[in-house]
Image (cartoon, rainbow, N blue to C red):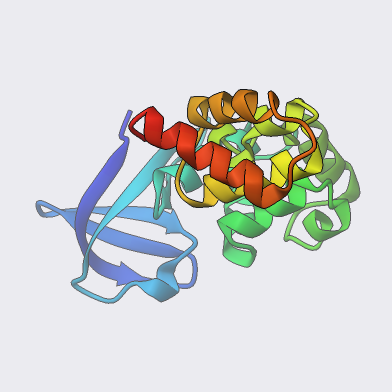
Length: 196
């Protein structure tokens, strides 16, 4: 299976490009043809869809976009052409936001997506599209006091994550009733002690 093709743009249209790779031209369905120019060298992540009468290549600007496409075509009744049309009308972030918030009406506005398919997409994919490190559920699962939550948010903004934040939270919990600023100071002291 082809994972990606790197080559120069030999031709392009509204929703496709032809990529010249060592003298071989690959025609690829591509949602971002407005971002390319002739003879530009690009790397396109591809999915090869094989049906009874057709072999098609679907291309994406990033691995994340390709992963989302693969999730979408796993939904019953949603084929690769329809999934690709979703990308031509809405960006990666928009599609994920619509699914994660259960916004069926936003999905229904996309070409080829009816009420039934939109509901099925939400049913199958909601909660599965955002990587764990983006959602950061560990902090939310434990019910910390508001001041500690705010202090942890501050530490997160400074670049601390995962186990470091859990460790800091455990230290903060030993001193109940403090202000956000005081908890933040405790957290920073703990990070410095740990060499963070």
